[in-house]
Image 1 (cartoon, one colour):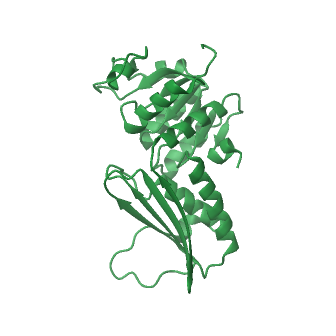
Image 2: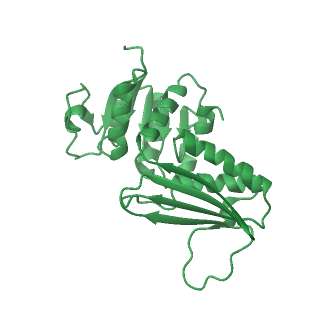
Image 3: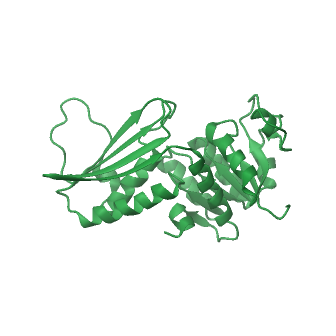
Length: 269
């Protein structure tokens, strides 16, 4: 049992944190060695299982990432950009695999994560599910096959508590479409339309975000031309798919050479 990789879950009290703790505990392939929360959180000092409303699991929630990471072979992190950057540096010091599902990362955050990846394995993805990563590959291939007479629009829907838009998955799909076309997404991205915007720019990639209720995640990639449309769609109905994917990434990263990887590497796609 002690030979199993030890995993720390950050943001333990959040929806994904709870899901990740449950996934690690049920996997039989890893062991939970740490559950992290911010300083002053009500869960700090409690057994993680009890804090979740269940039986004790022998792991106390802590607000000290340095102590937690020292015991870990992997850290799974679905938190916030600034927190993730700090965790990346500490995970690199501990030589622990850092699995990042955090979205809303800006170029400055990504540069610091890339620096940490020189010393440890980082697996970062806007979405950890098999289906979405297959959709990403399909999007790139379809975009490569169609010229700029086909407009590309990416429509995503999430629950009303999501704080960033477009979603990390939508941006991942946009990057795939741009790669298929051989263009820089930043140069052709339309993030919002309001008022008299004028005609759509030929070759641009548009994004639209819907927020409401408890939607787990829905993504459409629309290729629209005169007289026809192609729609590629993925619908997530259970967050457990993201937890399973993140755990798979944490296990895959063991004994890899330092560097930044994504779920396509993990899945061998």
